[in-house]
Image 1 (cartoon, rainbow, N blue to C red):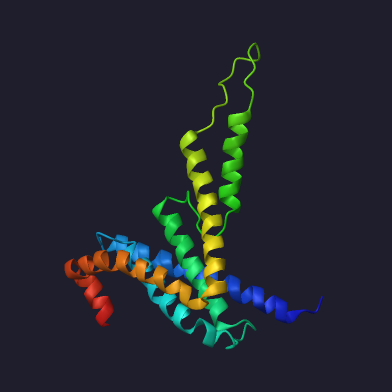
Image 2: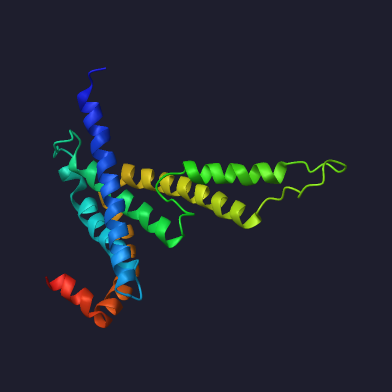
Length: 196
């Protein structure tokens, strides 16, 4: 349709998301290979570190356009989302995605379908269909928390602006810094990586 700006917008956001996921995976795999006690602390710390400037400078950088014709804040947020999504996927063994709900809604629908399935008696001798209550609770809870987070985030942004992200960044920093410092104290490889 000749809308190259729209194409560049989407391409930039998608590439930033993929790069965030790749960086998260590299950090976690590096941590596992070097036997860090807390391999998830590195991407969580990076996420907190990137959310701080996003919250502080979001309103200022909203006008800074990039070669992808989108503001720097969009690329930064897409990168953070990719980082977070890969982190959640790695921690849960691929069961949880936190930045999009299509997979979670699909799994929720599958479990609801199993729960509502009528196992008739007198049919062919087969294993009865049973839902997994644990999976139903997990995916239902994830969807509810995603919606709640979206509502709280939208309200915070409306009333306070980008700075509403700072308490979340501080929480992530408080959660990730102690395990990171523990690994830093124990791992010579991590100290060398940070120095070089």
